[in-house]
Image (cartoon, rainbow, N blue to C red):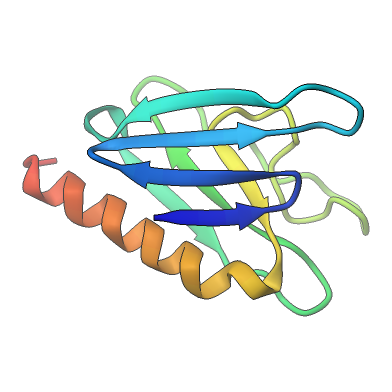
Length: 110
């Protein structure tokens, strides 16, 4: 399962979440998280005017706060490895990915 985000993507397969981000003018950076390590998820759907985001919460780590302002308002910062901003057209796929991650967490007894 894959969600195309803003300057990146999220893949979920075989119990692993892979977040790939590509900042403008830089090489893509890949970050892998085992679903066993996820303590929660946050999904804020995008609107037609503003991007939303998917964020994976890990034990012992604070969730990255949402930035304030018109351009980045309501999203975690780009350098947060455990989240990805999503456009409006990715809302349905992102909701399905978050549901799949939560279902996998439930199977593992979390």
